[in-house]
Structures are given as C-alpha cells and as structure tokens.
Length: 205
Image (tube, rainbow, N blue to C red):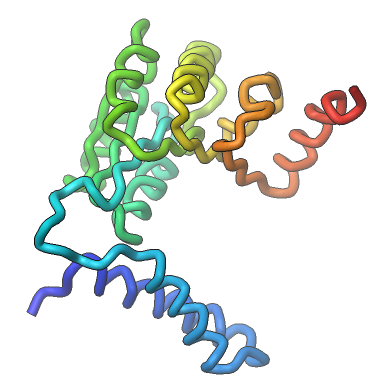
C-alpha cells in the first residue's frame, strides 16, 4: 500500500531523528519520541476536504548557471516535509538542469530576465513563503532582481527565509530586511560574522 505524504514525511523525520540520537547516546528513546511528537504536531493531517496547495506552497529564488543543486535541494526538501507545491525561480541556464532533477518541481526560468521582479511578483499571491538565495551566485544583474523581489515580498507581507548568497546581498544592503519581522536568516559562521559587521551601525544609533 502506498504511503500518504504525511506518513512518508513522519517516517523520514523518524529516520533523521534516529540517526541524530544515535550519535548522542546520552539522549533516551523518550527524548526522541517527544521530539517526534512535536514533528507530528506541525505536519497537517490528510483530509478529503483539502486540495493540492493548501498544505504549503513554497517559492525558492535562486539558481544560476554554476549552481543548480542548492535550489533543487531547498525546493525538494519542502515537498519531502509536507509542502504541496514547490516553485523555483531561477536563471534561464539553470532551469533545464533543475527541472531534470525532478518533475515534481515547478521551474520558472525568469531570474535573469529584465522583468524578473514582475514575473515573480505575480506568483506571490499564490505562495505562502519564499526561500531566497540558494545557488544564487553574485552576478550583479541577478542580485538587483533579487533585491526587487525582496522589496515586493515585504510589501505583500510574505515570509522569507534568506540563505547563502541571499545573505551576502543582505550584508551589502542591511536595510533590505531591517525591521522586517517575517524574515528569517540562516547564516553559517562566516556569514554571521559578515552580517554582524554590516548591521552593527544600526545598533549604535
């Protein structure tokens, strides 16, 4: 019998948790079960009254000719933990590669077009959140378009998760997300140091 998406997501989470807890023997099985219950609480149950898209529509903004893996993994991971639809807004050269990784992803080769901001903005009413930065690279034209996408996303009150070269853009222009409470930043150590240096003046005012 085929597993439903919720059951599959829970089993995938269980495997991850079992692996994590096996590396830290001090944790008990009860600790793992408590954590797994938290996962169950946030995965919506299947229902005959729902239609595709009601349990999460995610947009990933990133992907250039050199970097196609990161936007794919961000988008496919959203599906694997329970989201219904994943869109990838990428540069035209990245689109065929990302689409070839999985037919489950909806790929838009618009990020390097002159009207990229408009092309992404028209999808925003259909999305619940954006992930900005995976595989973006640092091409000036792409970064300008992503800047515009962040601005229209804020204007529409869309939650955004900013990672990778999206964080590099924010470090260059901290005002892009300064004070925006629906932005989540996910820096590593080096990215955190860069962001800290960039935003210190805000704390000194």
